Image: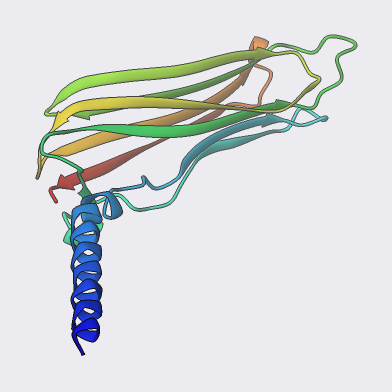
Length: 178
């Protein structure tokens, strides 16, 4: 009989500790993962250009609580990634006009530009799809503050021989704690 009670207390202790760990981990579980944003530029074998900024529309222009991003602490540092890729499938002989692939990522917090990151690549054909990750970090973001992020992707050929791609998207992220 005594052994059964001890076993019951041990089980209760394990459940209590498990719940405490779960509650402590809740901010980590609620931590945000940004909507995927990517930029892409491609020059085809026949000089046709495609690309632009692609994103999952999860920004919060309308201040909807369903789309708030959760901070792990108050304040917290917020890092925003931007996955970019470029490709140039043209033949390398004769050397085609240079293609300029440009990607930028800008963040604004409290009306101040906080970070800028960019990737600029020049190609002359013969480049398979190549990937890079840009990122910016806004520091000391407090609950109920906004970070506005602009993603751009552009592609131009030397000599203006057509093929311009100029695309940008601005996303609005509101943060809360917890």
